[in-house]
Length: 499
Image (cartoon, rainbow, N blue to C red; front, side, top):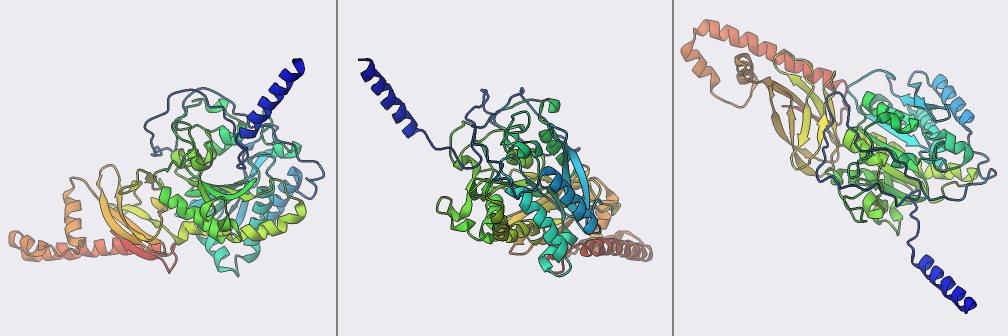
């Protein structure tokens, strides 16, 4: 009888294991979700000072335990000390187009080093910024190796390769090869406190905690980094699959299905840039075109990708760049060759596509911090506080109605046809309830309104004529200066207009 009961238990257990769903390749995820009502509304607006609110209570989301790669398998990969030395050597060799800085330290005190690549590293310019992050999970080290190779390739080729030159001269590229150096050392997924860093960010559907100090030091470093630096787009490099993943990563009801964010079309476009530039990612039989919506693949909560988009104003992709999380070091040159073009094209997309420009005030001719919205898309892009430049990534091949606004000024709207190339649209806003602004607007506006005859009938002709000539000339100089300053910063192939 006991033997028969044992056989029944064994068969029942085997049946359960057979029908369990397989662990997803995106690094594996925890099914633990802190209970709480889903949020029915959420804001996509980045506050004026770049800050954001974090709600809920503290938590840890532990991933399922996976076999630790052997020490022999790690042979040939750079150690943390090797990586630090390689980054320092790089900035010495390429000092004219790079600088090295740290955004913080890991749990065990290792610096989180970042390389910035630009023709003016360390300076603030009216240019978009892009960041690459690798080694979010300690047992996914391929990103570390590829990112240092990317930096060296740009340094070696920026004077002779048009794509490298475009990136150096028109983008501020920031490269963080290892977010999780502690876990890399011991070849585990989670950080030294056994926390999955890609489940440690504030989540829009299931609030976690308000206290930034309760989060992991690596997570805090990323969040502070985005408050200090305005990134237009970014990508994190993971391992365990071959696909470009985009928001949303989670759903309101925790179920698995396609859950689109407001910029779903744009994210699909960016993901396809990476996938189709890759040697074989777009040929995937598992993922159509080699791309996937995160929630459609499997939902996660507390992920870095969604937080970047909501609170950082940054369009982020999660890139799975290798089916094998920890391939042999001898395979790294091939993996780099397969991903090189994709990595470069994704960064270059910041200046090759989308709508870009600056916002000025007509009364003073100075950069005007403001907001840019696109009709039909529930997302706000904030112009830079000092230079008032904005960079609105959008999928090409359609018309967009773009509006710029700023407190105390009349909003201005224009319609843009976005083809394969980027478009510059510079907005000059008119102060509200300003007679001077109305005068300037009437004179500078080429709409053909019969302003001059009406003005001549009520004012001395000679004085009026002189006043109009002077003001019109000043207006002409102002707009010419605006266009000239912007022209120096834009590519000659990009269409430009001022409204």
